[in-house]
Image (cartoon, rainbow, N blue to C red; front, side):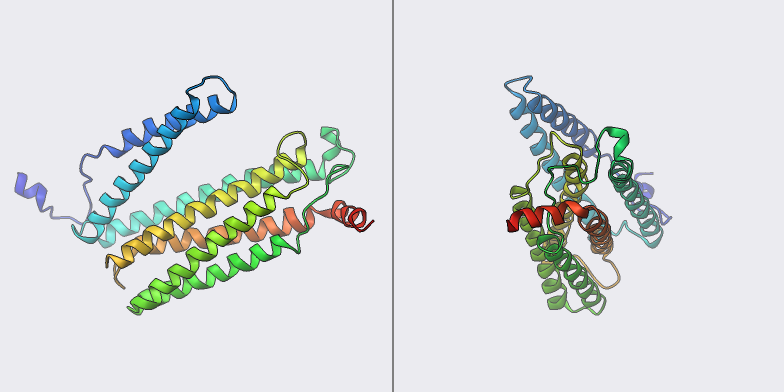
Length: 281
């Protein structure tokens, strides 16, 4: 029976017992409790609890990714049938992410269009100097669009077994992603409004900030793919991990286009024009 289990006569993968779900759950719990209590100034040890959760999550991700990469690359568990299931799972995950951002867009448009219902006479609210959409936001749009072409370059290079093209395509995409994050951090630090105290800042930073977090996650995803590329894990026939990172990165690109058009350009409204005139005087 042990030999039959070791060499199954089917295309499905019976996953071995793993510590990562319970370790990840405990780490996520510590991270959430530490973060909430830290922000509420409830416990002196809250920062320690938070960073303990961060370390636990990082340990979980590294260990879990290592196991999955081993299953796919060396153990041959990711058959065509298993890959189909993985693709469905990734599609559903991205669909859930789409609905996540729909919530933030809904919140923004609700207060922007029906601002009178929340006691705001105009949108943007009086006194808010919005960001110039044709400055850093436009630069970040060009950066992300360019990164979409470089990750596509890397994908086509992989399909053609061009290892150098794959590496350079990934390197360029990662650098562009990190540049986007740096530009957005600079933009945030120089914004004339804050997250707290006004509904415009709250909705703006929630929508764009969560997108920025997704860019960071996508950059880590691509960095892992670059490491695996140097380890020789991907082949033209077996590269599901890279394919999923490319899907995720294109999703991040598309969400940013909607953010740029709706929140930066449309949302700037007359507020930016008034701010520009005030700045000129």
